[in-house]
Length: 366
Image (cartoon, rainbow, N blue to C red):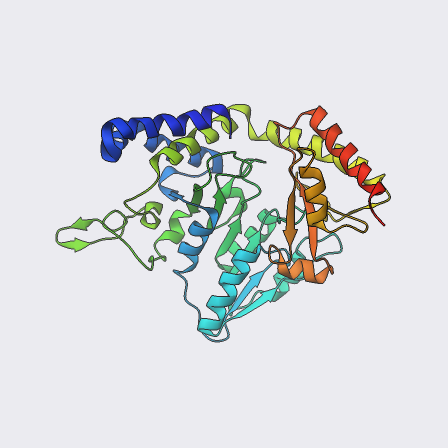
């Protein structure tokens, strides 16, 4: 998080110590409402199509739990589907007797649009896609998948956890019915925040499994669901974290998502070129277009061992195991990978230190 994001969170917590939770929220009402407008600008939609959640998973799961399937219904996913989504879909399919099927992919890793088109029939009730998979640099053709889904009138859920904050997002051109993202990743917002977009025309079909007096206000003696995406919110929320998220979105919009994407991809390309020249390093990125997520392994060392060696030198990298992207990891016979995620805040000196540290791992491999 940037210093100004932290300041937004901490300042509101101090306000709560003086005024209490309700008083502080009332004083910051306009700023809190502005978060919806900023999020709508970020995603290219209207503010009433936005709900603020405490994570990507929460928003995705709340909407998914509104869907009900019949025996034999088909749910299509990409091979790189995020493990949390895949677990939830498997659970729902087992409950309802539906079938989760994997969309075949091309040689470069993207979903094959030709084969996807051929799969679409009356039994397909949902397409779920992870736009930027967690285990490498692949960018899925989300807009083309959305176009196929819209033409076939099939709901399309897009997991944009690794995309929002890293690259421009326009839900209208993506043709998605639902899009979810956390605040804590590329947006650099507080943990415990998330964005949920629900297309206005799809919202009427969704009835949350549970409501309260905020999501379904009492009107004329009856509880009536809100007519906006906030039907997926509750009366209680971390207002300090929301204000931090709003500040993070503001900073991303001010810098410009095109600029952020360009800088991230420049850094990622520089790192990828250097890794290819290291004989002890095995790159694992897929895709004809690649994001700022860089996946690799080191000969003779586990991903966790690589992470430990780098951490000892003050370098933070991620490790993704099979649970993160189970279908793809199994298909490629991978148990875990190391993931580098350079952002606009990553300096050239830090990239140099990273590459020197990875290069030095050759001396400790068998």
